[in-house]
Image (cartoon, rainbow, N blue to C red; front, top):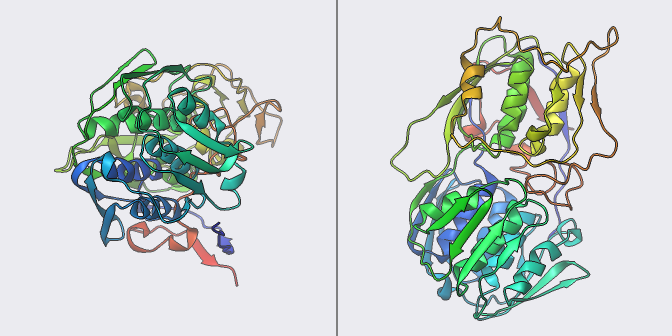
Length: 439
């Protein structure tokens, strides 16, 4: 079982932020790129890979399963796949570190194999529930054992699993992705129904690998037995990592702060809409396609400081901003009016266009434009606050994982903070924030 390392930091305040920077690659996409590359035929080349501990744990597990993985550069990975049938039994348990996403997706990947496998992780991961993935896999004919619903997870290889029709009780990208991975090797058709949209990185990437699947009105269907073709992928910069700089810019960027190559998948960017509703000066600038196959919409984002006003958060945006709510509360605390979040769970609708018109409206509106929310109300003099209904369960969210102790701080950590300011993290221009290890 792996043990996380502890790092202490001292943060000094600054008066402004400005410049141009990018943030590390998206973790969710990096995990999926490794796994699909491992079961594809041929060499998959990945650029922008997040070389943090979680994704490296996935790479290590796949290497233990016989997949040849090369890293010519920290953020560049070559995966030599030979098809799903080429995986072989590992010599011991597969340690997934703190990567809950990786463990749940690996359950689907390993269920139809011809060998047994055991998944373990660090102390935190060993406490997280796994039955919400194990139960529908068992319905497909897989044999999966957990320890009182938690890891270690023992997967007894079952090559003869079958496709099923399954309605997810709670929208979950992790459960959905695990079942789609299992469905690739299943006989017949796998049909999944979501009660609300969740992250669609897996569906987008499956198409990039040549898989045919259908999506319509919350129903996803996939025919088993399809082979994946290796491809070239570019992982965009992670929106959740960029969120901290977006809020910092909205509060303190006297000159534009530009974040480059950010993934703006519409199932991830609720924070953009929330900041726009608060009156933030933000421009979203879509980037053109590159020579690599890019299954995700990507943009540069510019933000400048301006007055923010409190809003009542629309319920439909809660699952689209769930990982960014902690940093959103900072913006809310600095708003001129009281911000209110009443987050009873409801189904949400995702705009089909990869470039929602509401972003363009936000980005190109004059700074004097009024964004007053009809439900905003003045706070008491001198009061700046955010209010959350006590009964709200933030864990019913897009990876919609009931095990997340704090939204956005469970299994989506990226690089350790000591890497900030190194390599492609280093802002160009006159970014003035200061971050140094505590003595």
